[in-house]
Structure formats: C-alpha cells, structure tokens
Image: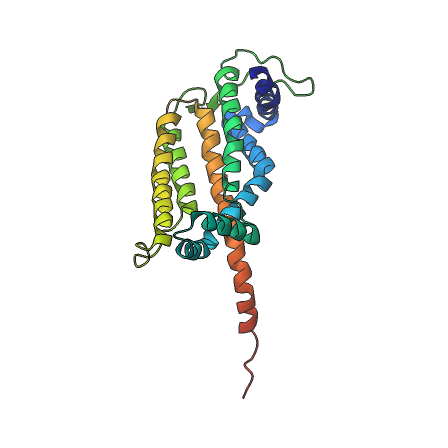
Length: 257
C-alpha cells in the first residue's frame, strides 16, 4: 500500500518539484513550491469549482429547507424524502464540498514525504529519465528562510489564510426572530459548527504547521490563497449574471403613458 502511494503520488511530485527547481530562474525552492502549488490547483480546479458551485447552491436553498423542516417537523422520514427531492430538483449535492479536501489530503501527505526526505538529500537520485536533475536542492527561500525546517512565521500566515478562506464559506445564522422555530434550530446549529471550524482550523493550522517543514506550509499557504481567489470568482459570477438584466433595463427609455 505504501509502495503504491509512493508510485502514484510521492514519486511524481518529487520529480515535478526537482524538474521545476532545475529550470526556474535562480533555482529558488520557494518559487518552485509556488509554481508547483499553481499546477496542482489548476489540475484540481474543475473539481473545486464544482464543489464550490454545489456549496453555494446549498446555501441558496436554505430557505426552502427551513420550510420543509417546519412542514415535516413531526415526520422525519417525510422530511428526509422531501429534502432528497429538493436536492435532486435543484441539482445540489450536500457532500460534494468535501471532495476537494479529500483530494488535498493525500497530496499533502505526499508532499510531506517529499519535503521530509527529498530536501535532506545531499544529492538527488532516482528521477525519471526525462526530468532534468539539478544535482541538489537548496532549501532556502530567497536566501533567508529554510524551507526544510519548521517556520512559525509561515505557519501563522497559513493560519490567517485558512481563516480568510473559512470565513468566506461560513454559513449565516437565521434571523433572531426565526431561531426559535423548529426549522431554524438545525440551521443555527450548523452555523455554530461552521463558526467553530472557522476558528478551530486556523488554530490547528498554526499549531501543526509550526512542527512541519516550511516548504509544506508554504504550499498550504498559497493553496489557501488560491482557494480564496477561486471562491471570489465562483461567488461573484452569479451576482453579475443577476445584475445584467437590470443594467440593460436602465439603458432603455421609459415608455410614456
């Protein structure tokens, strides 16, 4: 199982890292990791975009879900069936938002193995025949930050980026006037859990990140920043689409009665 993991993920990422490092101007590992992050993000972009679209759609159907929970407050089976019908009608998957994270975890573990072992080698070996061999990877970022060792500064920046990303995706609580209703209680609980994750995940990122190689945290930092940018693009498009008809109407002269 470990050998399969190395063959499918760790070895390709190691070769990609070494290949980029060999050709990037200045042979800077930090720049190499940023480029590697962009490549990985580009490969996963379609899946991430689909998950964000589904999560946005899930937020938009919250009023309908509240109505169903009020209507079927004494019929759990009927509520479950009605919710599935609503999800099917609106083409919403409540689980699709977890897919990008599930894909990122094995990549993260593979990169950890690459950073832990690859950056400590005095000489690079076992590259694919078509990958240029840089001979040795200098772990310094702009000659100032050792990316082979833990770095608290990068860990804090990664935590802040994680907080920014989580805040953009957090669900809103129902209005105070509705929170005591049966249909809104579950939404308030979900919102409370989301708020806890907003603060819990960044703290965990800083605590755990402070013990990991700086290169891995640099990857996580830029991955979060790219995710924030992707969320901004994904969440902005529907609003622009809705505003287009209004802009067109503004340009038309009013018809005299």
